[in-house]
Image (cartoon, rainbow over all chains, first blue to last red):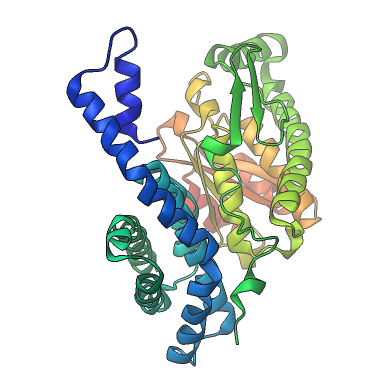
Length: 161
Length: 218
């Protein structure tokens, strides 16, 4: 759950919620239909988005090893799934923690920044075909977070090497 | 041509199995800690760790190290079996088929989630027949009585039997630097017992880790 909402429930243990606290809660509830919609779209149309991404990726990076492309694609799908869950919960820290603890390490081990730059541009491009601008806006902070995180990790990897 | 559907197995993309929030579960009413497969977990209070050190020291004196090392070996043996089972179940592939990178990532996360601190493997001396493991925030180093030599005997035992089973060769493990002695991290060196032998005396002389490695590889 969103950390702010969790805090509200904790604090209001033996009293009624205040107006501004209820406001925050109803904002979240109001945003739920669209969140659910985005989540459903991402879940049901994952292949529809990712297959053309894969085809384009391969076309744009013909010299890259298939193995590396496949790994990057798999990671991107996992990232998208974490982002979808984070979006549903309205909790950026969920996506962030999952991504840091897992992808952080693998990013350091495989240097895939060059693939990711192309890959995420394509993911954005194809997502905009299945999501409305409003829906995409809601998802973008999560994707940006993931991208930034991966970029930072691979910079770290380069500086270590 | 890459088929995205083929990249998915049963529509799953295995992620971080040992992630702390998903791996450790508790039942407050029963006072139980479990992992995500439902196996029991044991929490070691700091007092118990301190008591193990001081009790063993009083009962067995000098032999403390050996006792703890052997307990660690026993622990490591079971730990390896469980680790292998859990990963094989979750990732749907044998431990031997995992890449080194994936293995290290899992093992490191497993180490963190069990509360043993951060774990890193240094393969600089790999072609000389030694593996160096670096850990930070060891609960054993922080609770052991301060002495003049490394104190993470449990961990050394765990690592020795874990990596012996993983590599199929009988490996010994010696700790060459310890947080309890003011070091920034703990170093453990894994290798064949005969080749590691000289390190014992060098640790006794409190020679720094890098010097010990130079001597071992000379």
